[in-house]
Length: 362
Image (cartoon, rainbow, N blue to C red; front, side, top):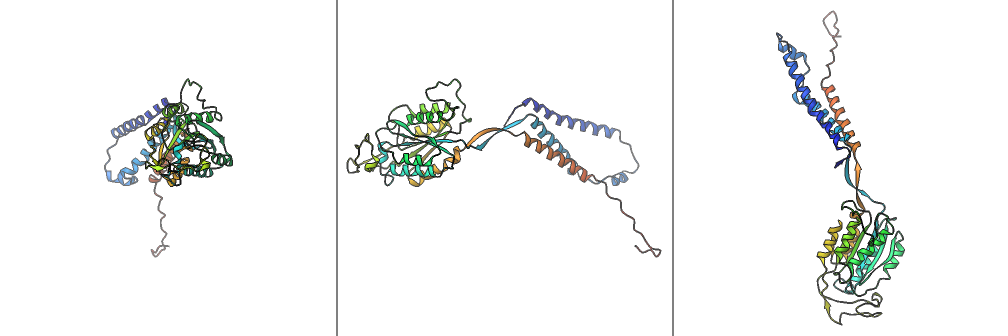
């Protein structure tokens, strides 16, 4: 919590000052006390109050003053609020290793199916962009609310050589910059990089099954995203179990390591062990304030993608909460005054009973 006028907190000194005045008045009153012959009679005339009944109203009143003093300083709190202007850039790895069959029928089929389900489950009005990367990265669909266009673009994905994770992040940043004037393109030099914690609502999600093999280093690209207050979430997909590489003819591009236009079976070359560079993916996420997730099968991948919006559809916002301190101060003071009046009220006089001449009550 922060304060717009922190110097106003000097009002807190009113509390010890009032306590000192109360102590001085009590001491003076005791010195001026008059000795009487019957203390018992005076005690009987005073309303009966226990010590805690005398103190509770005072404590409530003082707490109300403290709350009012804090309100004078105009407190602010950083809270998570829903963002209705989020752009999600989904960067999908289409390298040749996505043909691995450690996830049946292969990683490529499962990843594209999960991406389609992710898009279909987003709320209407959420803008989603699509980036595909292998040895190069390209923007297939700019951030849009047209789900049909996104689903059609996923249906055109084909595998190719190489894995350019860093370039995929930079391409996603540029796609965000075209729609959000607060985000500078990657070729623009920043004079005052943003601070982590004050993020833009736009978010990048990188889905990959391997490690960077070409282009800019992913961590270097992540630093560019962090400087622009854009978070990057990374997903490592697949297992470490060696498996045959099998893709159908319509999943292989012209630059595929298996040749263009032909299906490829695991009989040629046997199984391959595709290692995910979890250290780099974790560092990318940590650098930008995002998170790294691991998914080893179709269910885990769907769960990760489905749960992601719960994290990045919330953004930190600095909100003034003076009203709540004033409300608390009023409630405490009024409660203290009310209890004091209630416990110190004078007893009602008893109505004398009328009697008849015979001495009986009427």
